[in-house]
Length: 322
Length: 301
Image (tube, rainbow over all chains, first blue to last red; front, side, top):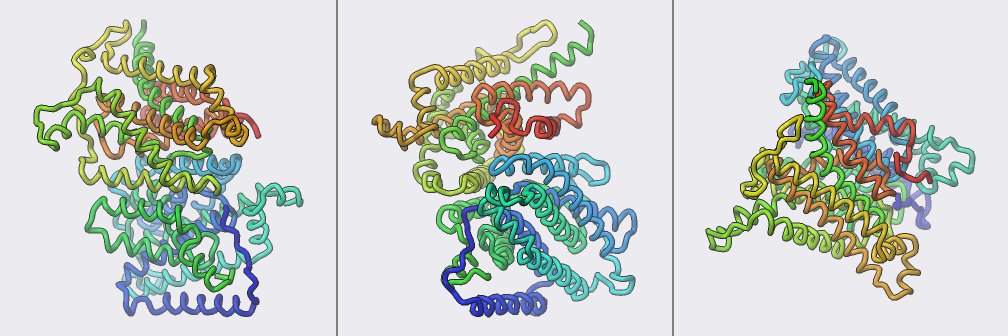
């Protein structure tokens, strides 16, 4: 992608300071959110923030635009829900099961899609995700148009009742923070550096002897698995999985969250997800005008705001560690 | 002829009917991609816009401007709509797309995705998402023709033949005329073509207008067959993307052939296993990716 992440002559200590401050704000927000936000809404924010961060690992840090990430989010939501509701698995095991399914699906879809690059990659992921959508519509266990309803929240570790709002909130918060930390570590590992080099100049990464396709595939699987983690958690929170989770518009929304927050920034997708989900919440009375607003934000972002909120902030503060 | 064969031919004809729309849309996408290096995600939405322009011309325009008796029928709509949609396309190119050529092509895709959402959202607000029937199907094309193996609506046969003619005319103009040669030269080397005194930015605008006009034309043709719905574009564009991946965007003829063939295959699939009809094109895309990743007619690069 065109967004390069250059250090603009700033000292590392200042960058580290800003980074630490943002971590502090994020953790503080996650821990105290129930005090001032309705808990179900706060959990929705966290699930979509994790989804957007997982997506950003692929688009922002590897330069691959997947237009089919709803497949992982939704497939994990359905299968975690099914495992918990029908097979009677405990919630955490169900969520991990959904995540595993998303990872396997990520392996298959990623393996097929990395055969082509750029916009073809986007079109292929979109088409493959559409297969998953039709599975969601037609397979016998998914409930078709109605979706999978009445997923029980159950008890965590057998004794923590997830029907208690605060208990489930901190459960979701823990999942979010763990997922976010995994992404943070991935980006800052040697593996993450190779991903960035692929984003900046794929032929050069190849000529330096990196097996580019293998790196892309692993990034795709990590991204798919964490998107699945977000989707599976969402289905436990809301107690249902629906076709919306699998729909291409959801794939589009996660792109918007990432773009609006700042492609290739660490905290941007969180800001983007909070903005988009809050906006949808505020505008929900307007019916399909919401879609017009989302589309208009897309247009504005692409035309004049390609760095996104955090990206612009990082430019103002002359740092790359946001 | 046995029953099975009849069934296959009948579903094949209906499939071919979808196929001509896939062909027209993937043709437009290929023309635009060739010239602008942009994948137009709004192509489906412009197809929908075309159908709505036809519907509005026939049923709503008259009452809006106070002439209740005014109903602009199918034939005038067949000419007016592609012009309206093409002009809308040129407006998009002039005001928005043009600023993105120097960036990664992904931004063009994202911009047109945003445009598609806006168009779909606006029409969803004013029109029923279940669809509105198009009332002005021409009298001369009502009724059916006997094809030997089935009775086929006259209008659908017209739509198939008309679309195929339009597709091959486009192919002819681009591959066999001087105008087309200039276009292709503009793709290869814009600076050189500009040096010959040809206004390349205007050529790009007109090409985008032509490609989107084709989408609008497909929309008018589709209006009497499928009911006019705000979601009709979103449903078709993802299939057309798969068609484009299968055919390869490098070739005009490839786009047309892939569109027709895949429509046919989709139709015939209905005979053997109906639930797979929705996904068969996507699975074929998977097969093509495995054996010929560049697409059937694409050039390996």
